[in-house]
Length: 326
Length: 240
Ligand code: SF4
Ligand code: SF4
Image 1 (cartoon, rainbow over the protein chains, first blue to last red):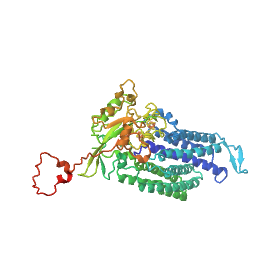
Image 2: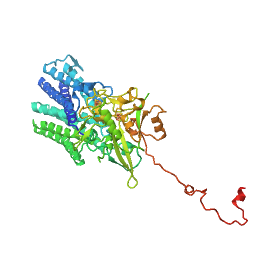
Image 3: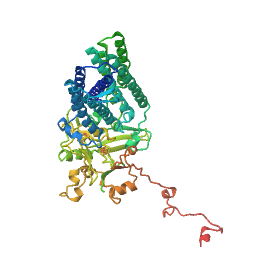
Image 4: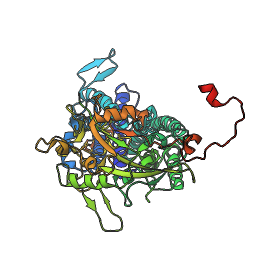
């Protein structure tokens, strides 16, 4: 498939935005039961603003993917059958939750109205909203991933690993960003978020490696034989019916050499997994305020490569019909 | 229920592209148009087509066979391109099974093209909406046309009658009979899309000639048998 930059940016940006929100809420939950140091409104409001900006940037990028962005509102109508439609509904919901979550923290609606668990867990409006946000963030990961995983013709994507990858990679980058944000503010949560970022990065490493291994030995269902229905072991296309390109030759091919693909794969395997982990560990040892930021940026760069490879790796059966120009 | 479809006879298709050009002409000037061409006279021409004729070579020299292979939307009975459309722009008509795109609703997200294994949907680069074969819906449903012209443009244009059009759910239709009696098959059956369009396989035309057809036994011009018989039993004795 042709890796479209709009979609690469959309999926990586909103992934980090959702992950950051999940990180903020995890922090709030831990601090409300006094496991970690409580943070002021600024931390949550600031973090929510960054998360919201990432979500907005992702949405903005997605419009460049549409031929007719002015009609984008129509995309909410077929949520019963289309994962794309479901994403179109859940993304604004996510934005709304993040917005109000940050706002309520900012205006200080954090007085508990109920204390659950025998006086251990004080519940306030932001906690309820945050919990709702967790559900929505996870649902959004599933919707985004299922857009790809549900297309059975793209066999490289048609697996539960795709959902695992989108979710864990998004969470990893979000928690990494939370660590970077904490380091920037100079609070004591760098280690807390850093640890979670390491955990999610390792989980993502597991699912991503599994999907790479699966795809390395994948045998495609369709062949030239089934494509034209002729039973012979040797069939070659002599003409695809036109000399110039068409939508079919642009949208479904990455037009890059196999060596370049290998290079991108190597790049993301290094940039997403070992390098940020190394940086975050060093920053923990050195108590550095800048290294977590570098760790997030390196990982995000790696995620761009990862998403590019994700698209380029998938081979669509229609390509069987577009092999030869002459 | 009616399911309109094409049946394409690979045995007689000569790869002349008459269906390609007539399709483009009819549809670019009709309901589905315009089907824009970019750089039509430049180095890298590109444009929207609903129908393409491709050519494949089967086997290796000298035992090769050339297969000309016209390809357009197959109007699948289980169209995977329809449920993925987020806007409902892609739909399958209840009354005749034709799969269509509502150009006023399509947002050009291209998702449907990913969900079609046959590569027959093309995004129009000027209108920025998805396009594909309509089976000439504006023509086959036009009651003002005489009955014999209510057929897709490609079918009318084909000089070898390689394209048959009709209802594949009616067992007695020309297309159903052709599929049944001449081995019509669907493309990529492994996906369960149940394409309505079918293809008729190529058939070798063979003549069997035996020895006695080359040598007429009762040829009046062959020389008479001049063997001299001397009293032995002859064939005449046995038969009479
Ligand atoms: S051939 Fe492709 S576009 Fe046409 S109905 Fe089937 S899946 Fe949809
Ligand atoms: S490109 Fe148009 S027809 Fe295709 S899925 Fe998107 S909105 Fe539907």
